[in-house]
Amino acid sequence: MEENRERLLRSGRLAFARDGFAAASMDDLTAAAGLTRGALYHTFGDKKGLLAAVVAMVDGEMAARAKQAGAQAETPWEALLAEGAAYIEMALDPEIRRIVLLDGPAFLGDPSQWPSQNACLELTKSAVADLVESGVMRPVDVEAAARLLSGAAFNAALWVAASPTPDETLPNAITAFQMMAQGFLASRS
Amino acid sequence: MEENRERLLRSGRLAFARDGFAAASMDDLTAAAGLTRGALYHTFGDKKGLLAAVVAMVDGEMAARAKQAGAQAETPWEALLAEGAAYIEMALDPEIRRIVLLDGPAFLGDPSQWPSQNACLELTKSAVADLVESGVMRPVDVEAAARLLSGAAFNAALWVAASPTPDETLPNAITAFQMMAQGFLASRS
DNA sequence: CCTACTCACATACGCTTCGTATGCAAACTT
DNA sequence: AAGTTTGCATACGAAGCGTATGTGAGTAGG
Image (cartoon, rainbow over all chains, first blue to last red; front, top):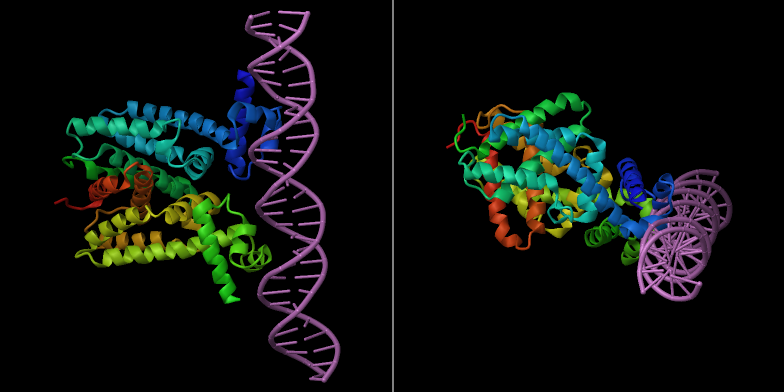
């Protein structure tokens, strides 16, 4: 059973990324997994249940990648900037864009209320909380700052991805993001 | 004919706002307008065509409201901040959230490529361009900065709207937004 | 004044899709 | 060993979408 669950997850992830949630056919994606819709309804409840599971999986992978990007920085502040840059780069992945950034909010509601608890947002929040605590960042509502930073990063990435030359646009987006983030800095160098 | 077109637009706007694009029934929304799907296909081509028309209409109204908010500020910089605050407040409107911020990007693609040319984004871009030109803002890619600002504002608004007490959360979001935007300022006061 | 054409929609049809209800074999329980 | 639950497959009904076709009103042309 556990194996069938993972096969459905993989197949759903593929179908949602390729066709979008609305256009993905449950008959097709379950058949691609060697099963039928019966298995899907039994395991995930309904189509949205599968989407929630896929979103949770991809979101977890994103948080891990962002954490890794931040771990290589020398200061906590630079770690936050690195996480932001990592978000921007990740959102260039069509799979992440479509599943987590577009269909996720549209069909599951705001990320802050996802059952999976949106690992990306939690990561940014804890980083911001530490920086405010230590006085590196000016006093600010932690959730608001985290939401603004990740929102800016992801939205910039949507723009980069839609641009005719993403590779050339990406550095501009990252530079501007890091400049804007300095608004939170207690003392700008 | 022009009247029927507007009735379909109004009915579509209602249905999309209430049920979301995917769940809205063309049979129902055309019937509510006193017509049938035949009229819709004749006038708008298909379901997405109606969505694009509705999005263009709402987006235009949003840009007008933002412009008005900016016009009352004393300096161009404060006008930009006021526009951002206006975006945040507007996104609390369920209609705007669902149609323009969620379903629009999900079903029509990135706003920068909408046929309607996304009036909100254009407005922010021209404001940013002027501020960079006059040296109030540090040198930065204009499109990137505009995208980051509007993305941050809208994403913050999605968070505010999903919070249990939007009225209490809203000021925090606006304060944090204006703080973050100062990162673009050439000299922070 | 009559015919022919076009426009703006309505109607009819087929296909796909979703959710549920039911069937069924295997594993587990007692 | 009989009953029950689990894990799926199959069957069924109800929308919904897009297209193909029908139709009446208006318009143009002769």
